[in-house]
Length: 342
Ligand SMILES: [Zn+2]
Image 1 (tube, protein in one colour):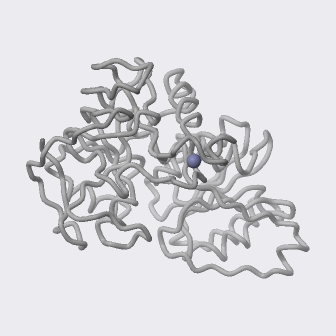
Image 2 (cartoon, rainbow, N blue to C red):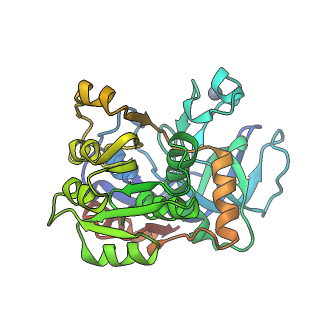
């Protein structure tokens, strides 16, 4: 099968398109013919050797997969060969205390598709059978792949962790990112007011089209100052943080008393401080949120099939053009998801 692999850590030049052996599945696994695979910042960090968990080399990345079942292990029930499916990317054993409590993203044996084992930037990928989700027929493979990772991450943050309520104000950082385009829509779906940031005016225009009520170009203005002006010095109820080090202080400066800062990623670095006096006197909650669950994925796919959420696709590339696709993501030129077609 054709696959995008890297045999050493490095820049996009480390990527090559090669023929690889077909994966062999076990009784609890499925083989998926990948029709669309999203590109995630995680792919770039893995290829650069910057993730805490490093894959064995050579490696095929890719955590966001929609396709068709090519082969099923004998223990995988409820699906049939040829069926269109999406893969829930947060792999879990289904048996530990967290999984039994429905908190599979904190699984003691958790993994992400394409992190330790080969992922979906290939014609075929082997996946655990418990991560298969039926793809709604209303969706294209590209739309389904676009919703598998960052949209469930935003859903888990806003709905499960921060508990967004109607009438609240939500600040969404990096409006053009996968998490950003999803968080804007989810916050609006739940009846919140949305303030979105980006360094690109064209992305701010698109964020408005997605429902953002106010937008801030953070390259031109200190977003925390503008947030305080827009909220009459009160601040926002929820900050959707996924940028990390470069925005952390301003995120904390943007949150209202009794507000929540919910963080799911640190693309610019993981160092961040907090003034403990401010934290307790303002009664601010800082909430960690990691990925999203299979139930989150089912909900997001249903809402997308109903037209209540939109899959925002920036561009699609053939797998052979993965370097150009990764450079577009690395340079933050995208609005929404970049999708590869193997
Ligand atoms: Zn578990």
